[in-house]
Image 1: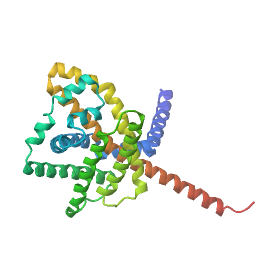
Image 2 (image 1 turned 30 degrees about the vertical axis):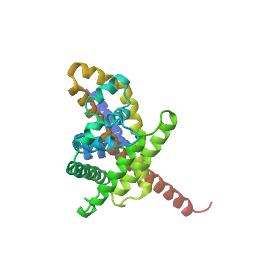
Image 3 (image 1 turned 90 degrees about the vertical axis):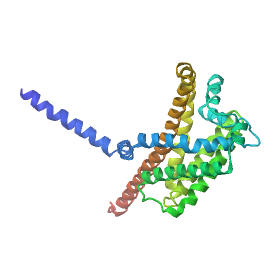
Image 4 (image 1 turned 45 degrees about the horizontal axis):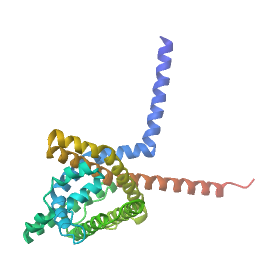
Length: 283
């Protein structure tokens, strides 16, 4: 009986030490910030809002592309990295580019642009929550417009890239630069470029990993879901992919903040060591 009672505190103290070490580590801090940020909830909101507000605008923009006439379906299929069979299922979800362009009026295009601004505002709110900043002022809506225009141009340029490793390199570098600039713009310059770089790098690597995951999982899933559920199954897979994009966009920014803070801790520790060495009396 005494052995059990003496052993329990040891096991409990070992568990508490392990928990404390995890709690104070960079991984523990990132886990807590992700829970407080409600990362999955924001990724779901990103996917739903993007599908409702941004996708209709991109359909029209892709249809008006003078070089690439395949439309938004090809953009989406390239982003998913799906096979030819799954690509056909994605293309069935959208109207032909010519029809989408002919049936869109000036009023409809203006409405789509306003909805697109709302999506930019949602991304800004997410970044502000990551850095725990107060909400931006209402007159900064011009930032959403600039972001939407540059984001559309970024997608247009991505659609015109060739195949191979050169395209992969240009796409990754372009993605890092775009999300680096996006954070700086939408946060109104309240966070330094250096602090935002780790988040941009994490987002670029995360989106590359999501593309590989999509080729391995989402591509065959689209084909099987289309057989089982029809077009609804394809929509569900596309929506799941958008959830993954939202998870990477906000999760990358969150990871970037944790890495930046960890780097600052390392620098502070090095400064303390240097001061301690200088104050140490000579022997």
